[in-house]
Image (cartoon, rainbow, N blue to C red):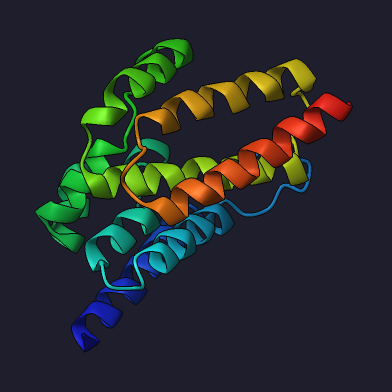
Length: 182
């Protein structure tokens, strides 16, 4: 267990360094690492802190996609299991955004249980961010579109973790209700 704590803190530091220049898209412009911490907390709570691989995957879920980190570097730092899990969550940025989004909907149901849990936590965190601090250039229509897409992704994650599914549903319906009032 103490080794897991050391690895966890190393991963937190690694993610903080790699995401240090990034900000969330919302009006508040909060540091991107806040999102990583939120996703990690959700996965940690949902697993009772017992699944260190899922927790590490949550901390590092965007590291390959959104930073210059390579798979080789990630493997060297955290091992092949972590790299494989993060790889399941990584979009191919060479593809157009619409294609990447469609691929997520089509492939999420074939992902590992851990990847599905992280995806649930990630989508929940994103919905809450859109509710509380929407991107300035996202009108109501764009926000509704994101909510519906996230809902479609999460359909493929159902059955992986009831607590994370309930959190997603609460955020989704809260957001839909708020968007309908606009």
